Image (cartoon, rainbow, N blue to C red; front, side):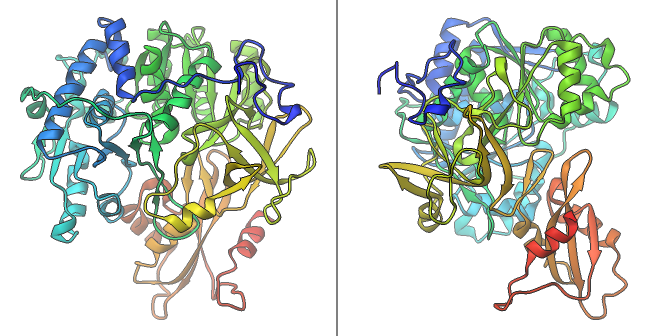
Length: 567
């Protein structure tokens, strides 16, 4: 394929390809660590991160990541070993991510909302050697680790406090942080016995051995749940992650002069790409928000003249809901993009009318290292996935026969491209089922149903897989059901999606109670769920029924319940 080649063999897809963009990328054949090496050599004194009033230079980011890589190797972490990252957005997340890559190891990012019952899987399944976590989550890791058989337990645990990344005098007063947020950032819970503190690991000043990871070495193992069973690890190499780290900047007009806002959680593939990988490749400065807070977001965009913001549409809806939003200076924004939920037309129109900004929606999955499709910002369509990006061949096929569907007709979206993952960790059957070969190419089956218009733009219509999308968080019903079955009053449970004005969709539980547990209320179940599962998975609605509809083979017919809910 030469540089002049069209983006894909499907003629309608070139019609909308922006003339400013090359059709294919030269993807660097290096590790991700090399991206930091380059940025720190080029821009040593430039701010890599800005966090609550404190900046960290590229030279300092590299220095700390090298010291941490040395510490990891001293704990016995070798090439290809797994190290879990369990914290909210903060500079330490970037330092730890690049330290793990520098040590030739593999990052396992874990949602900080997970509870001990959920976290154990992220130690046992990937055979994690070390966990790097924030102090407020250390007890979760400790409890999960203690519940495992001794042979499966961690070798070491490294604990950091968010306060360690704050200015020495504490949070910059001008930012006027909400008291609860400030308290949480400054907290210093006593860590469990036997853990290493972040400051000790850095102070040891250990020098790592030579860096040997190459483009095809495993770099990241993010977990995604599925229609059945426990979450599965998606194997991403340095190369699969590099494709979008390079392409994202070109697509969205980014350069070393750009300033990004990192508020989408970094454990999530979108937050990781736009908050950890892309900005470092570009040499950008990154304003980091530990948690979403609309007032703080408005002040940070104004103060740091943020140019690039990838977000979830609910964040923009929330920002517009602020009584102070007209006092925020959002004129510096150049590129606003996101996904996870459709952007309502009215909000998109306000963005355009009041700020001259187009919201460019994109589409991708954990398996595709974030986007395979994106809207060109100069010609975006609303409630649309966009067009296939650099090197992506995407088609709409009949889910059964795999025959390509005519234009405008609905089928399963399948994609082939440089960012597609290698397969599921130690799950050969699931991997085989996720791919199909067409015209000698390996296509990933997304499980999403959609159609393509005459200009090559893709639109999603429904899902083949059973999933709930609550404000961009993916909730897999089978996982919530498995946890609910642990409640002593629950005989049977079926999880479905309910419409929600703010979250798009929300979680609803249809429950059959055990005999003798008739006094159990919806509040009882919701309260219990809050203790035992991540907040975004907790059912917001509970409906009690005498029985669940079942097929001849005894399977719960969730589609019937889902259709009834929609009606």
